[in-house]
Every structure is written in C-alpha cells, then in structure tokens.
Amino acid sequence: MFHSFRLGSEFVELFVGMGASKVRDLFKQAKEKAPCIVFIDEIDAIGGKRNASGMGGNDEREQTLNQLLTEMDGFEGNSGVIILAATNRPENLDPALLRPGRFDRRVPVELPDLKGREDILKVHAKKVRTEAGIDYNMIARMASGASGAELANIINEAALKAVREHRKVVTQKDLEESIEVVFAGYQKKNAILSDEEKKTVSYHEVGHALVAALQTHSAPVQKITIIPRTSGALGYTMQVEEGNHYLYTKEELENRIATFTGGRAAEEVVFGKITTGASNDIEQATKIARAMITQYGMSDDFDMVAMESINNKYLGGDASLACSDTTAASIDAKVIELVRKQHEKAKQLLEDNREALDRIANYLYQKETITGEEFMDILDHPEKYAQNNEPPVLDAEIVE
Image (cartoon, rainbow, N blue to C red; front, side, top):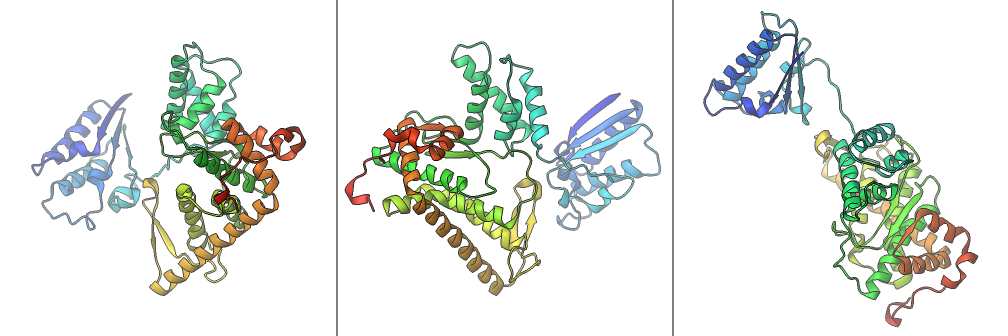
C-alpha cells in the first residue's frame, strides 16, 4: 500500500490557486496508486473555519479548502483512497470538513495511561542495552503524565548517563534518575546553597512530604531531594500514584492543596517567616482550588453550574470565565478561603508532628537525597534514628 504524508502548511501559497492545484495533484497521484493512504498533518493550516477566520471569497486558503472538500466527497469517487489528518485544534476546523463522508471519525490521542507508558518505555528500551530485571512498571508510575516523546527522552537520558559513567548497560537507577532530568532538569552542580538556605529547603520539602503522609488518599512519597536542578527548583518531593487515577474526590483534591501548602507551612512553623521558594506551590494550589469551584461543581453556592470554560484542550487548556464580574469576585473569595483553610490544616499537622518534622529534615539536610522508604522508616521508627533527633542548629534570630 502506498503512503503519502503532507503538512497542511505545504498547501498554503502566496499566489491564489496554487494551493488548490497542489491538492488536485495529490489526489490524482493517490488515485493512480490506490490503494493509498493520504495523511495530512496540521490540517488546521488549511481547514480552519471560514466564517471565523475573516477569509474572503478569493482567499488562497479558502480556495485550497474548497478543493480539498471537493476531492474528499465530490461527484467522482475516491475508491481505494483513505484520508487521515491530525491537528491540535479540532475546535477550529470548518464544519464542512467534519460532516459524514469526510473526516467523520475523530480519534483523540490522549497521554498514555500506566500500561501505555510501560509499553512505550519497553519499545524505546529495545534500542539500548539494559540490565536484566528492569522494573518498567515502576518507571512508568514515576513518569505519570509523560507523553510518548518524554518517555523516549527518559530512555535516551538513561543511556547518556550510562555512557558518561563508562558503563555498557543501562540500570534501573539510570532510568529513575533520568526521570528527574526530563521533568526537573540536570543537577546544578555550580549552585551552592548557603547553610541557612539548605536548612530552609530541607524543612520546606519535608513539609510537603509529611503533610502528604499524614493525610489519607495521598500518593506515596517516592523521593525527597534538596539538590538544586537546572529547572530552577532548589529541591523537590516526588509522589507516585500506585496506578491510574481518573477520578478525584473533593477530599482528595483538598488534600493535594494541603500538600502543596506544606512547604510554606513548614517555613512558618519552624522559622516564623516565609521565602520565595513556594511560588510554584502557590500556583498549583490555586489552580486546583479554582478548578474545584469553577469546573467541578464542588461549591455549595454554585452547585453544578460551570463558571469556566476550557479552550484549546490539546494546547494547554486555556480557561476563560463565563460569569458576571460580581460572580467572578465571589469565586476569587472562595478560592482564597479554600486555599487558606488547607494551609491552616497543613500548619496544624506540622505543629502536631513537630518532632518528626525536625528529625526528618535533619536527616535530609545531612543526606541531601532520601528515598520514600527511608522517609517512612524515619517517620514510623524514630528510635532507629535517635542520633539524628536534634534538628539542625539555626541562627537564633530565625528560630521561633
């Protein structure tokens, strides 16, 4: 079977009529070589809505689109020719393209689930030499939300790490560390934190982990590190879901907000002052809280009324409010109230477990990176770490 691949932008020409001519030539070749598959990538380049794009009657794009519509479903049959197209903006396509007989079947290509990520990793791992017994399921769970390209990059980064260390096989540890590289960047070896900053980051990250561990329905902590990364993060806490998670309850989302506020809460509980380190946490907590009220109907006042609409689902999902200014002000107030409530809950959890916070932060400060198993062991068996019970010595003026 013959295959023909074209980009939508290849049909757009400066001179009127040239794009339509290219479409005719393409379908002429396809019919001659039938059975044939024609694949047009970025179809929105020529298939945008005519009434919404301001195109006039002599516009080159409109003539190209009209020719494509004619070729796809004109008087002359296209026996043996199958036409496929791809776009990230299906909402912008002209309705005539989507009617029965043309592109009448839509196949959403979502991010892979757990099984999909595992299979994709195994496919790309065939291109490199790996040690026996690699747990791809674990790697797939750690790479939650990764696209196919990011999964391929995880394998590539693991191979590069093995080469840099003069090894001939990729290990489980290489793959785990490559996930950090893909999502958080490389270790920033020239970034040297001051002693005070290092202590602050230690408490901040343990604050996240401890709040998560002390709540139900929270993903287990996989790793905590205070080694700066090239992404700008001075440290991070990795949580890994046990499997696919498609539905979240109101309680689970509130717990996630509390976990995001845990870092700032730890700074307040221990040092009595706050830093700029919680900027990303603030953004994520606010995003969840706003979605709960405007999209998920988790507010008694608004019930099941959508206050926000999502645009460009496949290009980041920009949101726009669909309510009056008065309602928007009320939404803002409820978002603040929700985040504040979870922030106070996080602070209370840390105050009630201050001894564990100090013990784990001290251990992290010394080791710089600890696993989820170490974290839970210190939390559950404090007697094993008696020598590390004393918290890091802090300057007197910043101790509460």
